[in-house]
Length: 134
Length: 387
View 1: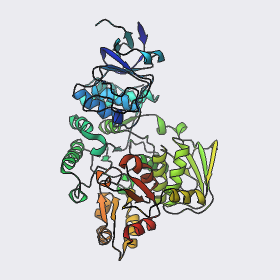
View 2 (view 1 turned 60 degrees about the vertical axis):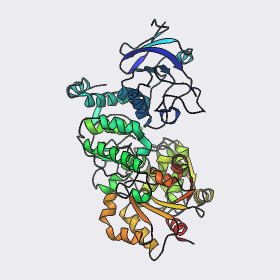
View 3 (view 1 turned 120 degrees about the horizontal axis):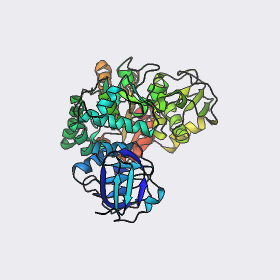
View 4 (view 1 turned 30 degrees about the horizontal axis):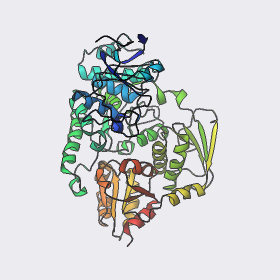
């Protein structure tokens, strides 16, 4: 199935979905050395975001969170793409400086995509494809 | 968003990858906030300097940039005194990493002022109507409110992008329509010194990211305004406020919400956060002005400290007042430059820090993970020197 969205950071990538209904603070929630969600209070606690299409309402917290995304990318542990309901500066800037495709204005239902579903995020064409072929 | 021909070329990468990314950042932020174009700015204050805050991740990103600031640009406080870190007990590995961060910024043509009070260190750097891209919350508040300049609260990467391009998106506090007061705050009784920090600590939480207009009994000094703005920016996220008769006037229009505070409320801040049992005392949040340093020197005359006492200020201010610094240090207190008790890991080993700052009071529990006690400057000196 295809969905329209809005480009925040360019690029196109496909991967397995990891979705949450909770905002993510990259400074604090995610370990920049491993890509694991290390905050016991977060819905995604214990999951690894590396290589995933990360789907969440938006970012929060310190602007330093942008740098955490950059470090993850340099270590090959970043999400391949990200999808938000509404992107705010920390995640937008983090995606841009790291070269991670990012879109927002996605349908809210997409926050419920089951883990592991193949998703393509085509930020350049402002298109999301769920259950994309590998 | 409208982009000039030159901006289009920058965005297309005609002047290199660093500037292309910087433009991409500003355009993305502009789109998020509904800016219709970019505007030139007079100066940039860059946040994201303390290695404690940005870590390896930030150091890597900054080190990878290739470019030079095109407008006067200066740094926020770092995670240590760049010269006296050893005697502060800073770990040598941290010191090496912190120095690398500052050096990476220097290579980009950004000045290592390492202070949250650039307006007191660089006279004339911001004047009424000037558009800026500053990033430290108390400095943003002072620039907008006391000087009547215009800046949003930039983050690390957006401030850097602005330094490299000399531009910022036209949105937020750059626009008249976002500078109208939202809350009226009345205090009919006398306020002095650290009372302003207590007032801001209380008001910030209620006003959040609104624009308060204060009606006070007396006219606050510039240092008192500094304390008021700093505490509201920390306990709330106030970036602009007005004080009738003391700051540039607001656009007309009576705010909808009304609050008032009295001396009981101010006293309650001290009662809720007692300072007497603190094992460390730290003043200078925001950094001390020359007048504040002189007053502290007077209070410490003929006294000796029995607890660690930090007096935090900008290096340029300490260098301009060597006799005052000497008098302070005769007591055993340390005049610390380039950093502060909130962003320097050397404050983490204490149990409770006594402060005269509403800003420090708001930040210490979360960022330093120790307790904070609040008192006037005199009370804090008393805690530091008593048996």
